[in-house]
Image 1: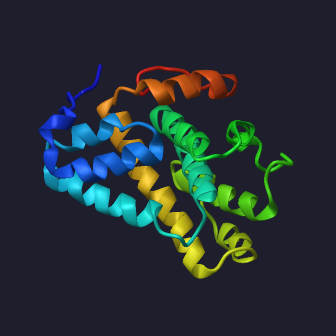
Image 2 (image 1 turned 90 degrees about the vertical axis):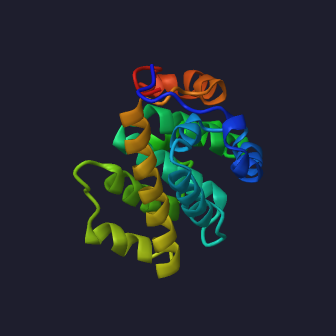
Length: 195
């Protein structure tokens, strides 16, 4: 049971245009938005930040999705793992690659550039934060400073969402729940308190 009951979509008509874009992009609307909606300024600020982080063209969409998935996995947020996995699949990432994110260091599905970004994502998503200067040095072999900032922005955005959803015990929607059960359960993912 969620710690704060979410509002209904109809309760937040001022965000309908953005909700429609999010729904089209993700294939569903996150319940967390309707919990944030209790304070519309928080929801508006989050949507603006999320748009700036996730809609910019500095790094490609697949990398953003994989980085968000890795950071959420490291943080242990089952809700966000299901979301990021389902969103990545909805946007065309191979489900085998999504499921292999824990084996990114050795899996042939990942490039050296992806490995550097995912290593930074896993380390930044750990608590305490385990990101090192070496992580950044490895990223610099493949990415510009601008791209590294964009990668860290994705990690930080999902750090906020990981904390928000685990604290609020946000109820997981059916689409990402089905994705998690089908594609992530072999990795220890399960519906529980935070999913």
